[in-house]
Image 1 (cartoon, rainbow, N blue to C red):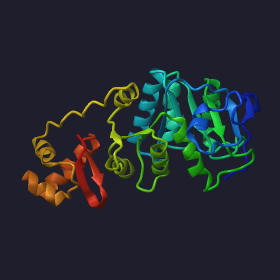
Image 2 (image 1 turned 180 degrees about the horizontal axis):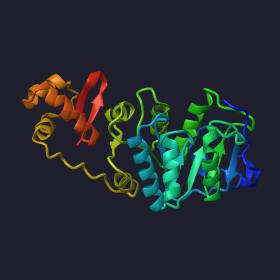
Image 3 (image 1 turned 180 degrees about the vertical axis):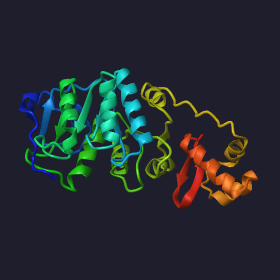
Image 4 (image 1 turned 120 degrees about the horizontal axis):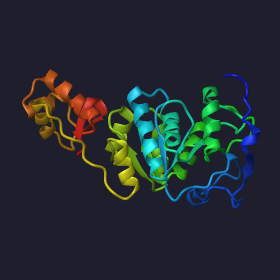
Length: 287
């Protein structure tokens, strides 16, 4: 890691304490021990509705595209986007919110005067210029530390009225953010198709297949069920699925399909948001 890279002080860095004008009310209302000090670059005033969007740093092209689409859609709907300023899903969500001419907040796992990752220098400055903010509870000068990111994740979860996990591995820090969100009685939404998000679906997260689903849920509606496949083998497999996790051999027997055919069809159903993958290579129906 390179040495500390200072944030442009023209962006209005200031320290805030609970009760100060500009200290996020959501933190005071949600956390039993809200941070005694926050450093903020920018001047953020939360909208009536906010959503946290998080996911893997080493995200797939599909995951980053989905995160950017969700960020843009919710921002266009007047919903603020909260994320962690990291590579991958986080940055895609921030950029999507900017695409939608909305407001986004990056909660940092470093001091406010540290740009991390360094490649996000321009993104961070654009977030502030467009009416959003950089926010951290860590003092100036503190670089990235292993302990700082789980702490940062709690702030992300507390600032959002709901949490969307777009893509995550089975060991992702996004799962810690989801646990914090549940502890704060936030609704957790997950995009099917990755080990981490499928695990969240098994724990009761709401499946969402596209940006329109997320907007609908945040506006008090419901996600639309995914479109059923036209392939007859996939349809037979879908009819054989239920809410009990089953391995491919069991599903092939239930559907009357060859194991190889079933293995290919179940992946298509997973990518289509119709099934989730459980532990041990087992699958269950979401809709």
